[in-house]
Length: 398
Image (cartoon, rainbow, N blue to C red):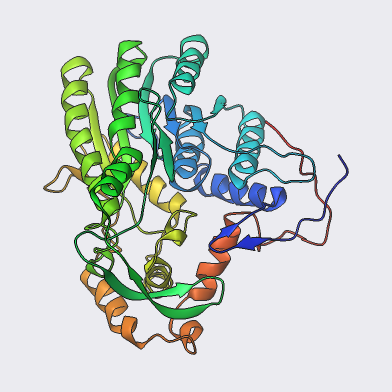
């Protein structure tokens, strides 16, 4: 296929194309941010399975495990390859870059592309571990999907971002018009709550771990983590106390059950890791969150405490998973990597700015420019060092 000049095309809160060279630069930067920076530590992972491994926290976890600790990694994700003159998804190009750099640096990397909720992809993943890897000692569950087809019932569940009980009104940024607007969300009904829990709760995580236990594919002392978010009270009606929050509570129940099962059978553990708010394809879609992130980022940068997905995952491995002692947990048995975000002084500054922001002063009072840059960067656009007027190869695979 001839080289193409790729210009960003957006629809609402999503880019409908991706730039392979921009994605490669992003992965390169993350790899450089880990290489040679991790101590050998204790309990270092040797064989890691990351479910949801192509973007955001999942990709950052995979890079931290591979280049930080020399782990063999197997990534599972659902990404669209290039087709004709259509680019692939950003996650596809991220994975191409990951494999290319892993090969260059002599690291073992395998990937399975398909619906992680399906039994077929679970079987394919098990086959790769049986054939090419030793038993897995760390399983990271980092799936973010708007819908799930349950392979046992055939039913399609769609998740929704809604409050519970009563409508919720607050402010957000319309990403198309760049206006600060008021948004009102109607409450979810019982079916919508159940569907959201089915997609984003702990059921599929339980099924993955049950399959790995049954197939004897977990090492003694194996640990598993699922990622979550709590956030400040200003977002709770739409997040922690909304439909997503119900799913996250279900995830915490799953962690408790899996911890018991792993402890009894393998001396292992299961935890939920509550991570910091970062710009992702999923977070940009949640009303209120773009404004919150634009303010939070500015406040945290001023204090030199801001972290992206890679810095968070590097800290997760160094301070919690490989520190040589049992990780510190909160009262609900969760790892808390959102400790800096949730500091009283951080939240007080964000809350003080919140009512002051208008469309006119948005860029002066917040880091909306940084939010936009990071968001577009997820798709390989506006990445430093890339000449977007140059044609690039789009038909890439690993």
